[in-house]
Length: 370
Image (cartoon, rainbow, N blue to C red; front, side, top):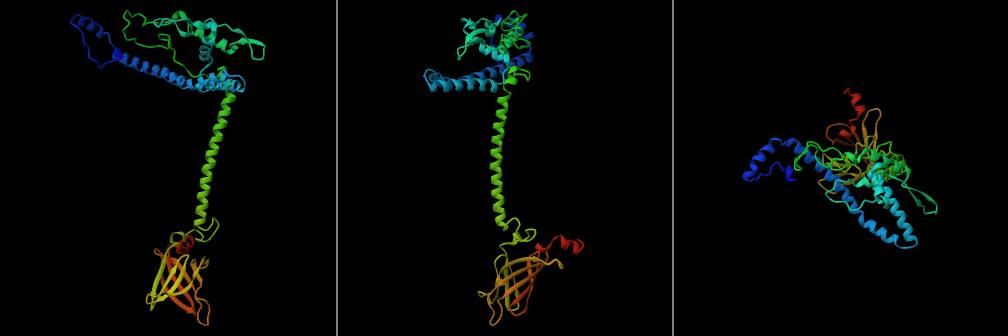
C-alpha cells in the first residue's frame, strides 16, 4: 500500500534524488487510484470468502465428530453435510467451472504438492488436463467421479485459462515496484469469481430448490400478511364496538353523532334549566338543584320530509297522575351544537329546538341550494 500512498512523504538520500525525479516523470496518479480501487475490491472478495469459510468451521468440526461415530449419528451427519454442500453451492451462485476448481483439488490424484509462495503457479493448474476417476459407490457399484458436467466444466476452464499465458509480472516493466496501468482478470493468477449464468448446468439443477425456497418465502410472507390481517381485523372490531357495530345506526346514518357522543348541552328558559346529554339522560332543574329526570337517550332519527334530525329521550320520572316524562329535540343545521328553545306542549312532554353540524348533510345542502 506504500506504493499507492499518494500523500506519503518521500524521504530520499541525496544519491537517490535523481532516480526519483526520473521515476516521478512516469508516475500516473490516476492509474494509482485505479489500482488501489481494484485491489480493494479483490481483497474484499477474498476476505468475504475467508469469513464464510471460518464461520463454517464449528459446524464442520461437529459434523466430523458425528461422522466418526457409528449408527444413526453418522447417517444424520452425512445427510447434513450433503445439505450443507448443496445449500452452499446454491446460495453462493457459483458456476460449474468454479465448482470444478473446488472439487478437483480434493481428489488425491490432483492435489498439488508444496508450492513456493513466491511462485506464480495457479492453484488450479493441477487439474489440467482433467480426467475422471472410477470410484466405488455406496451401493457397491462403480461409477465415474467427478460427474461429467464437472469434467466438461474443468476442460473449459483449462482452455479458458491457458497456463502458458499467465501474467506473473507487469509485462514490459523492469521494476517490480512499478505501478501497472491496468489489472486484467487473472493478473498474478487471481481471477474474480462471477455468478453462474442462466444456461449453466447448475442453474437447471437448482431450479427445484430455488422453487422450494420461493415457496418457503411465500409461505413466510403469507404468515406475515395473515398476522397483519388479524391485527387489522381486531382493530376493525374495536372500531365497530366504538360505533355500535358496522351496520348500526347508533351514531347516526353517517356516524355524525360520534364527535359529540360524550357532550351535554343546556338552556336556561325562565326559571328552569334544561340539559340534554347525548347517549345519557335529560334533566330539568330549578335554581341549580339536582333536577328532574326527563328521560334516557333513546336514539336519533331522520325526518325525510323536513331533513331534521330528531333526538329522543324517554322513560323519565313519572308525572303526578300522568305519563313518564320525555324529551324530543328537533335539530337543524348549524355551525355550533346548542339548544335554541324549550317548550312543554303537553303535560310532561318536552320539545326542544336545536342547531348542530350533525344535521348538515347532503339533503340539507340540496334543499337550500348550497
